[in-house]
Image 1 (cartoon, helix red, strand yellow):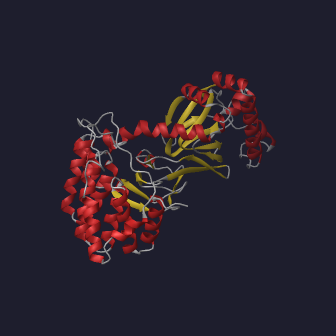
Image 2: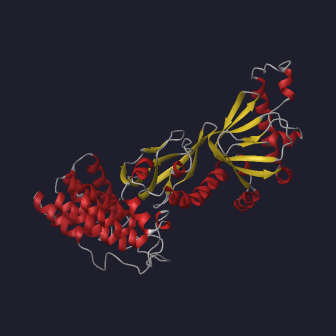
Length: 438
């Protein structure tokens, strides 16, 4: 098998993770020499120089990378370098304002653009490059610094327009710059869990470099939701709700993340209103995508039909403790939980809790009976999708498999309800079967 740049990277990463820093520096420097446009290799040269204790050389490489990456349309890599620089020397945090000036909303540089792609790791690698490397450690470090700080037109292209940074470029320059003072860089190795479903969080993240996988657990099975690209925001629901995480995120490759901690944002008096406004539409699109991928309601539908069905839903928000469905009322439609949780109550007894992608309200529609339980939003409030009963009836008429699913779900909920202890006011346990859910 021919040696490729990916081979060099794998060897370099392995050495770096095992703290064999000179060996790692050798391979990363070789990649920069063979692929001058490889910004990630330049970043790793700086990382290994720093690990070797050559702070001055590392700072020079980080600074050059930050300036050129920002102008070349790779601002997230610039932010990684600048955050590390500002940790080395706090006075250098002023450099972050330059990125804000380039990428904040209203910047004349933001617009439709194309940027030069990073070089492919599948390109062949010439192993004779090591013959031209200095043997002595100090000379190797100097050689690495010179190579990694040298940029010319052959390796970097500066477009006239710059593509916006997701979320951040929606902020005014002052807010953008303020947010940049409090983010952290999180460096994650392959196969590491970043977020776990069910945990409570206090941060949201931007994927600055690398590959992650998002999944959720449904009915005991892991369902892959996405393998997002760089620039993707995740964990953003923490800004809108204190509910537990609704999905798990795992690093597929080594990743660099920009972490935004709510406590630090608030301490810095960052205007969270602007962040909430910017995240609102973005978060809802993410939630809708997750629901269409995981809810059984959408499984029989092709992509066009899913889009059409989503358009039929109405968005409903309920505050903590607010009633969604009240026992004894006529059922009006089907609900899908988009965000948060609801409790299903019969009297004062809780029968179940439902979370994102789960459905309720279908039994009264199928049986054409008044609802027999109360549905209430839990502590963090809930966001729901509501489908009117007329369209629900058309849907199950057009898709027999959906009718079969809902009938099976109704039977299962009947069984669960029979296991509940009767309320004190109920004459017998048999009456529960009649006074069903929803």
